[in-house]
Each structure stands twice: as structure tokens, then as C-alpha cells.
Amino acid sequence: MTRCIRHATVFCALLLTALLVNAARIQVVPPAGHDGNPADRRPTIARYGQPRGDILVGGSPVTGSLDTGEQLRYERTYADGPLYAPVTGFASQRYGQTLLERAEDPVLSGADPMLSAFPLWNDLARARSDGGHVVTTLDAAAQRAAYRGLGARTGAVAAVEPATGRILAMVSTPSYDPGVLSGNDASVTRSWAQLNEDPDKPMLNRAAHQTYPPGSTFKVVTAAAALDAGVIKDLDAPTRSPAPYTLPGTTTSLTNESDGCVNASLRRAFTWSCNTVFAKLGVDVGAGDLAATARAFGFNDTRLRVPFPVAPSTFDTTVDQAQLALSAIGQYNTRATPLQMATVAAAVAGGGQVRAPYLVERTVTANGTTIRTAAPRPTRQVMKPATATRLRTLMRDVVAKGTGRNAALPHATVGGKTGTAQHGIGNTGTPYAWFISWAQPEGALEPKVAVAVVVEDASARRGEISGGGVAAPIARSVMEVVLRGGGG
Image (cartoon, rainbow, N blue to C red; front, side):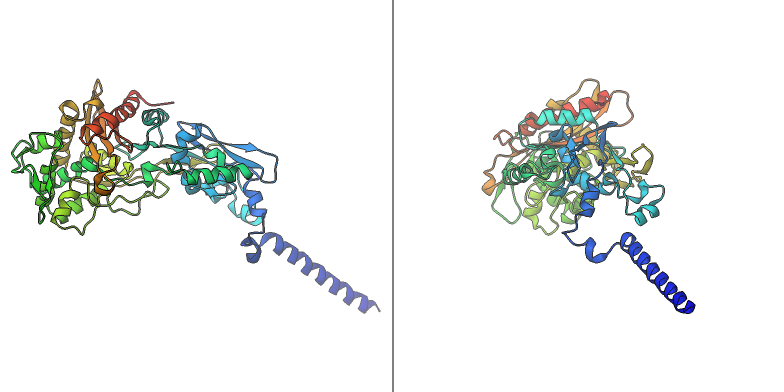
């Protein structure tokens, strides 16, 4: 009898042990069949069960978290939402995340193991650390100046620091308030539908995700290729360029908006943006060398992240001579984002060297401990230093006595290039006004900022002065606040 009782006791102990082991397995080991089940709301409830970390500009948060007391407890909030939306994106309980909210979601949501001193314990307990913060490179004053400058117009501004690649401003208009997508009620669904149906595309980050024909701003790239290849040796020598210029292999004549372009020197052609000179230069340089120079500047790069992906700017490498001539003046299939054209200006400002742009300076824990910093950006040699020096001279002339006078600043050296890009069937669309520039304060050793501005709904005038009249004042306001010291 005693032996039966002993056997029964051991058997019951084994059953209890098995029960406890199975209970522990269910609690600790994530069941594959459940975690991927959309009906399982536990991960979603856990994600929104604590405040989300913040995105910081100039040390101050431009995001927040609102305690709703509901099952999905915390909703995302935004300070100056439309101003920073092209950078932050949105974090929505219903529609997910975009831009920085998506690229840095592991840190902001608290899921990144680097946020915890004991990440293994978090895995075992299926817990989350407090959300970390993302410190951006943005200059609040530059961002605000760009946003005010664009106003009600459709367009974008990108500003970078040439020596480092830090993005100082990234603005796109029209914009929207990402907070209207944060919650989970019917108003969020309505806002989502309205934003997606809006023909002005307010959720589009035009600075990084929209490409445009760069027009005459691309002449910086063409000039760099011609100088590097030795096609042009003297900035003031005649270029033997007819006006009008017949595109090779066609009967199509290319004309200019300004006078005095026949056999104009590179200096004059750059200052007054002679299409005929640069179209012929593109053909003289050749498709291979011009494409190589464009690639060095960053065109056709599909890998750029800032940290969210950037739309690749493109230069067609399969062109005939006529198409090459048009590509050399920023038309045909040549397309660029404002961020790419800010990088072009930065390469000239940086003496022929450029660093890839980036938007996140560092990420930190909730109590401010740094967990990651921006990796050093390798320097890319875009052109010969002597070529960059000569291009800086040409860009200074544009602002001092050419089409970019509206960008001039007191007590600073400013270089720029205007552009008016045609588009639409038969070039009937209202032209895009472009301006790219850099600025160096008096007494400084190097330029402090490079800017690109594009305005879609510019004046219908076709001349280069459109870029100088519409886009250059916006660039000037951004450069001015950066040189003044930026801040809030």
C-alpha cells in the first residue's frame, strides 16, 4: 500500500512539473502561430501602453505622447506638426509609421535592445524599455525660415552643412499635421482619406522623395565635368558656341533667354546661364565623362539613407548626342531631388569633396545616455580641388552680377546658380524655379551652409530670372539665419 502511495505521489509530482514547465513555456517562448496572428492584439497593446520617445530639434522635443486612458493608451502628438512633418513623418495606431518615425521606430518604441542594461531579461519577460529619443541635425531657425519663405507655394528646401553633411533644414510645402493620423477613431480614417485624395500631395516629402528636372542648376555639374576633362582651360576664353545651337543629328535649334551667348566664355555663360554654351559643352565632354561626374556628385545612387530612403536622382547614361546636349542643361531625363542639388552646392563649397547627408546626430535613452552616434561619413572626391575653386568663382559671379543677385548677404561671400526647368507636354507646364547656393561668413575659413530651393508654382516667365526672383530670396533667408548662429 505504501509503495502504491509513493508511486502515485511521484506520478503526481511529474504531472505537476510538466504542467509548470508548459505554463512557463507558454509565458516565455513566443508561440509562432500566435505572434503572427492579426487577431492577437497583445503586441499592439504593449506598443502603445507606454509613452513613445521623442524626436528632438535643437534639444527640444517636436513630438510628444498623450495618455488617452483607452486600451491603446498613448497617442502620438506633434508640436509645429506641419513644419516638421517632412522629417518626422507620422506614427499612427492605424496606419503605421513613416520617415523618422519609421526609420527610428525601434528606439522610439522602446524595442531596441540597446536601450536596456539587461536586454536578455527583456526578451525573457517580453518587456519593453522606456522609449528612447532621436536627436536630429536640424537647425530650428533654418527650418522655420525655409517654411516661412515657401509660404503658400508648392516646393521644397534642403540645407546641409558642407563640412559634415549634417542636414540643417528639410521643408516641403504644402504640408500637413501628422497628429490627425495618430489615433484610432473615425476621424483618423477621414483624415487619411482626405490627405491621400488631396491633389497637392501634402504627405509627400518633396525635398527627399520628389525628383524634378534641375534645369540650369545642373550646369554646375556640366561645368565641373568640362573643367576636370580639360575641355575648358580658361574661364574667359571664347567657347566657339553658336547661338542658336542645332542639336546634333536634328534640325531642332536651342536658344537662350539672355543675349551675348554667341561664343561666350564659360564665365559669361555661367553667369547669364547660356543654354547653347552648356549644351555644346556636354557634347564636347562626352556622355561617359559627364555621366561619371554626375555619378560622383551622387546621381544614380539608389543606396542613400538619411536614415529613411531618399529617391535616387538620375542622369541617363544611354543618350544620343542630342539627348546628351539637353541632359547637360538639366533637361531630357535628368532628374534631381532638392537634397541632391544641395549636395551639389556643398561639393563646390567643400573644395571638391562632399560627405553624404544625414539627419540623425545621435539616439539616447529616456534618461539621456547616448546609445548611438552618427557614424563618420567618408569624404567623396567629386572633382579636382582646382575645379572647385574655379566653380566657386563662377558661382560668386552669379550672385555678385548675374541672375542670383537676390541671394546676396552683407558680410558674407555667397555663391549661387539659378535655374528654370521646363516640364509638361511640349514644355507647356508652369516652369519650376530653382536656386542652389552656399554661403561663407566674413572671416570664416570655409562655407557654413549649402542650400537648394525649388518652387513648383513659380512665375510663368521662362527666363533664368525666375529662379533668381522666386527661389533665391528663400535660400538667402535660410543662409542668413545659419550664418547668424541658428537656434530656435
